[in-house]
Amino acid sequence: MFMLHIDVSADPRYKIDRRFIRSFLKDGWEKRLLPSGKVSVAFVGSRKARELAKKYLHDDTAHPVITVPHGTKGALFPGGDDVIGEIVICFSQVVIFAAEQDKEINTVISQFLDHAMTVLSNVLS
Image 1 (cartoon, helix red, strand yellow):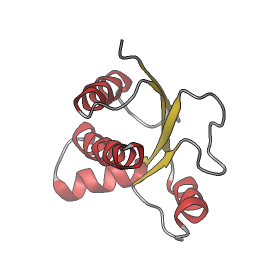
Image 2 (cartoon, rainbow, N blue to C red):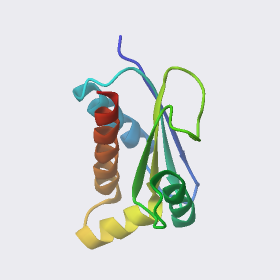
Image 3 (cartoon, one colour):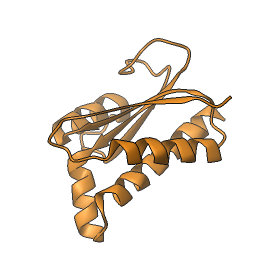
Image 4 (tube, rainbow, N blue to C red):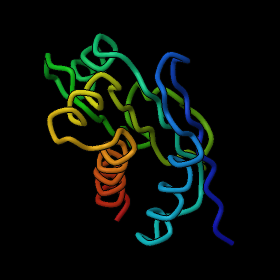
């Protein structure tokens, strides 16, 4: 039986729809036939996104989305065999992209989540 545990964390000032995020991830996960397990989605500010980009991507820029597969050295949530990966989304980048593309926040978040699932799918296959 397919089971995906999704942990969504964000600062309370970030207006995100956790129900939408969980539903979008679960549907996309099943369509890609990715394995059951745990996935963490964290919404961070630009400073934290830049710090994580330096650590994982060796780039001194705040990326809109960073995907860290389980087993990566220094992963945010080490432990458990059922942890698949971590998705970090820079909320300020979400707002910028939404304004530039004249789209809703959830639409941009879904684009970033789709990209992250593609990355995890490529790593897992």
